[in-house]
Amino acid sequence: MLYSDFLFIYGLLPITILLTFLDRSTEYKNLILVLTSFVFFTFGRPMIICLLFLTIIFDYLFGLVSGCGRKKWLRALGFLCSIVMNSSLYIVLCWNSLFKNFGVEQLTFAKKLIPLCVAFYFIKGISYVGDVYKKRISPEKNIFCLLTYMVSYHFMVVGPIVRYGDISDQIRRRTITGQNLNDGLNRFIIGFAKVMILGLSFEKIMTAGLNLSELTPFGSWIGMFAFIGNIYFLFTGYTDMALALGTLNGFKYKENFSPIHLSGYVTGIVKGFNKLLIEFFEDFLITPFKTDKGKYIAGILLSGILIGLWYGFSQNFLIFGLYFALIVIIEKLFLKRILDKLPKIIGYIYTLLAVFMGAAIAYFSSLGDFMRWFRALFGIGTDYMWSGNIRNKTLSYLFLAIIGVLIMIPEFKNTIKSQLEAFSQKSDKNYAALRISQTVGICLLLVMATAASITA
Image (cartoon, rainbow, N blue to C red; front, top):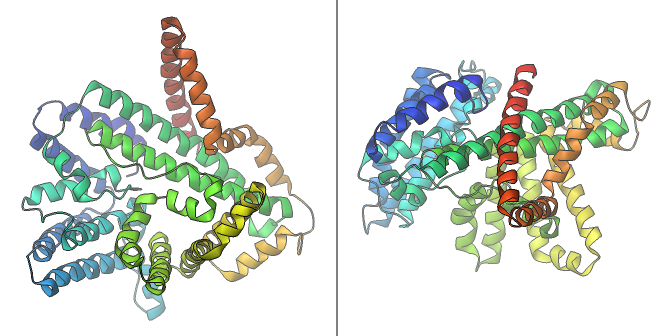
């Protein structure tokens, strides 16, 4: 099941909210969260999900071992065991297609589990035991609290990667207010609209432009930019929905995305996109070695490799991770100082082109397909500038694409927000009109997103 599924939005979610209000105790709320999360996951393969839940027992034990006191080797052993167990299960359950190269029959449940993004589940287990090992938190003695943290569907499908220390107090005590419901529902609907309206609009243009059987210069350029837009709105949309679900259940999570500012160059975009995942790898592989330049650079490279493989266990994602890691290193060593001295437009163009090429590395699974697309950018091997299909798709979704591009620009959003706030503060009448308009707008977004998901 996904956040955007009808069964979840109009079935499981409202039932969960209603059941949560039947008792004020946090223990009851946690029980409802665990039970509804189990229902959420059983739409994969129930027996496999049960096996995943069993890993909680092992991570619970590994956490106790990692927090056992002065025996550093024993604490390190607990952390290592958690890494080995979670990483192995991630590879076997999510990317078992690797084994076909070794004559091993593919497991039958991979395609059912990949949409659940159980990578977030496994990395939460590693982060919990790792934080205990580094003495950031104490080992959890109550396994039900750890169970609530591990299986909550709020951050399972797309993140954010919530660290146990950030919400352990909330698991034990939290309240749900009317403001929680209002803020949570508004953000959930906005996220739903991002995915189903803007994300799918960019996907239509992307599919037409990057059709390998009909590559054109215009299609190659516009198609790859559409792919970036598609990824942006899928990621931010599902993240909004995840954070909204937490708010509806009384949780407060850290934001997992920072607005795009080209002035920060590629390093700024890398740190702002899925930033809690980046912070996780920084904490364990980069920050501890800041005083040693060689180890620091090696940590960035290793983090890039692991993050790339985390997104996709394949050759192109390995190169994708290395590509961005190398750019970050080069910017830190000297390129940022050079770009800061040049006109801003040069830095903006460099950043856009660097991200553009990185997106292409992630999109194409083979070097041959990548090279065909790269040559098509300059008209090599193509018969005409654009095809009828890409022209029709671009014109059909041009209005939504323009809206999407404007939303991606922080300065535009901030200007609109400040203008609306200034308007609402002029009088009570203006404030009431704005609030009514916002409510109507949210309802329209829900209707439009629902209609888009039906026709998708």
